Length: 109
Length: 120
Image 1 (cartoon, chains in turn red, cyan):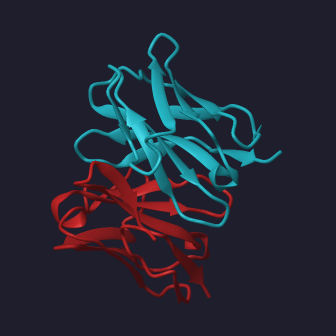
Image 2 (image 1 turned 90 degrees about the vertical axis):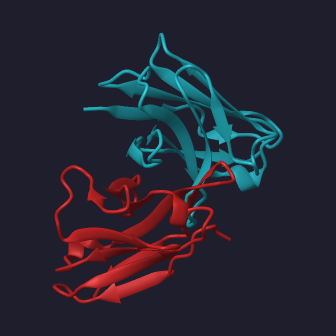
């Protein structure tokens, strides 16, 4: 059971938009920065979004992050087949732990 | 460009100790802006933070693993290490090392990961 809650899967057609949610609490998301990671099949996670909404170097502006209260979202616009991957949110928790969501598998139909 | 590379045995017997090293290249591990961390991912599952260390030696561990984990740093070699004692099959996972931004708590870049299997 992950501290941060994500939907197990989302899907959409190429060119469409998708939103991945990440739900937490006042111990983590509400009072700490949120980051997002993309894990392509068979590879290590890669930093996508940090400090809630800043894009990591080389990440296209099709990817955007936001945070409100105890939840955060990752938006991907103009889906491409190469976006098919697992996406994880992460944050610091006041229990002095780094926490992650359980991951969301994005399928581009 | 900063790179991290994990190394160590891919097979460990139950009850023994898992030992991994992460070598940092393209930058100094003695940066005041960053921690150096370990994260693992059991096959087919999500990410689990293990712990991280500051170059001066301060450590932070997952409460669920704290009694079995030791993370150390060797600034002369630009390396940090992970030891996990008394392993069981539940410790089978891909182990990643990564840089962690102090105060902002994002991980990047990550090493490529190394699969450690616990089996007799």
